[in-house]
Length: 66
Image (tube, rainbow, N blue to C red; front, side, top):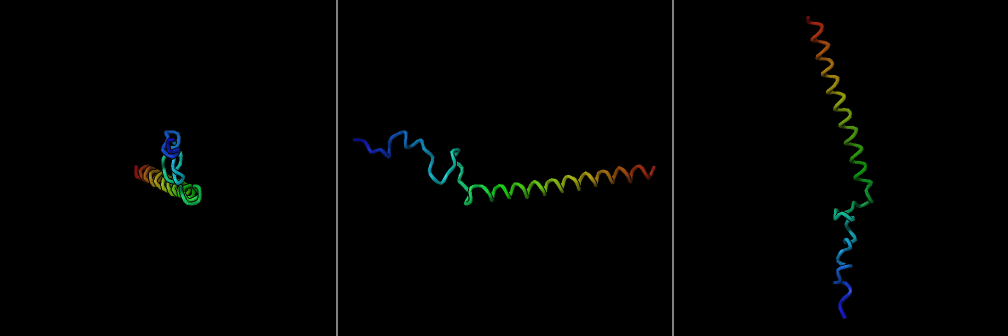
């Protein structure tokens, strides 16, 4: 009789420490990853607004010198 751990059906299942797509799981089921995404979102939003404000300042200063 064949060993049941070497059957193709058992080999198709992902390892317990990986997700279905093969990527490793985080320690707390994604909370760290979600927190990093939110921090990055805030940083990018603030950065884009600061850059847009700088561009608007350049346009304002450019119109004053005409």
